[in-house]
Amino acid sequence: MTPDTNTELKQELTTLIEIVETTAAWLPGVSAPHQGLHEKSGVADFVTSHDLEMQRQLEAALSAAFPAASFLGEEGVKNAPAAIRQAMDGTAGLFIVDPIDGTSNFVYGYKHSSVSVALIRGGEPVLAVVYNPWLSETFAAARGQGSFCRDRVGTRPCRPSSVPLDRAIILYGSTPYYRDLIVPGYRLLQTLHLQGRDMRRSGSAALDLCYIASGRGDLFFELRLQAWDYAAGLLICREAGAVVTDAFGGSPVLPHASSIIAGNPLVQPAAIKVIRELGIDEAVRISEQSSR
Image (tube, rainbow, N blue to C red; front, side, top):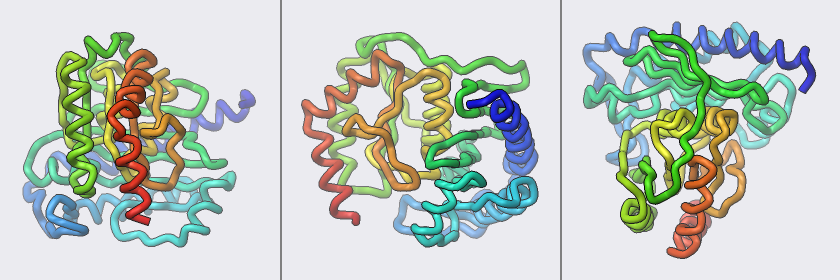
């Protein structure tokens, strides 16, 4: 990456952070988070009028600042696969956006949700921002330039932990939208929990990935996530020095749904070994094939 490209990416990241923080500033003040609530694909899959409004505002702001880029959001945007791939592979890029990651938390007043935005160019994430407006905490990364966390106290680089599995805090997602993966996920969690120190379930995969990047947890897994759940966190983790693969040990392929196994360089390979020993990778493979 050339110096000019580095400078341009830094400028673009500054713009992207400002857009996300400014656009999301109203979320903590919402007095009726359940407004417009309805189910999308099942009882665990919520959307509210606030998700839709946040996505509308983000698309408008991003289109104004990055007029050549395309937009893929979680809520109500239908793009042809060929158009998505063309945009991702191009130089203008594709924004992959989750307007509120952790909608269930948001609806219940459990103040742990985030706005997640990634810009994909040449098939890879080049910019990423994950913002928790309740804590005024921003995680961000530009490709090849590391990742950082900014809050009311200041800005500091993200660094993963360095503990082995037997001292690991395990963050996990329970695949509530994919019922066939719940039992395999619990089998994996039980084994890792018994081998590790403790576990956490937060309800925002985007924030979980940022917490791995910044050493607040040692391993995160979820056996299937959509692209808007993991695209930004993928870059933030990797730029911090954490390892992220799918359940088979390969790289997640955007913009497709994928299993995500993220951790520090000691714990993540150990988790992949456990996944293979338990046959969890085969359960994931069968689930992916049945959903095509």
